[in-house]
Image 1: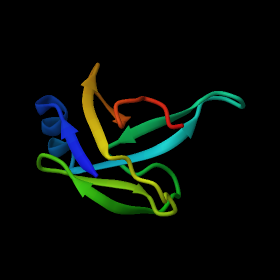
Image 2 (image 1 turned 180 degrees about the vertical axis):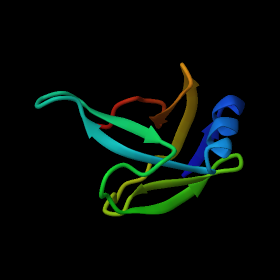
Image 3 (image 1 turned 90 degrees about the vertical axis):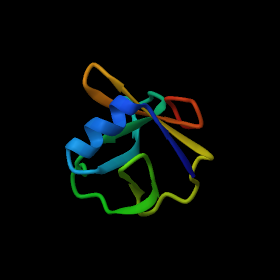
Length: 91
């Protein structure tokens, strides 16, 4: 998996500990499956390292079988956003 990150996102992730956690999240009961990202692990989930970006490590859920070809990381309103093969949702 290639990690493509904006300089601003990479700087914020590094400043907050150098780890990025990315996981699928369903929007409501019937909403689309989207990609969530944070610099701290959410809840009780188990993660494994899946790659590295510009100065940070990327972690995905331990059970996640399919990884994207590219993971794009950007910063929007001081929040880290991740895009799976260029999309905000997972098919």
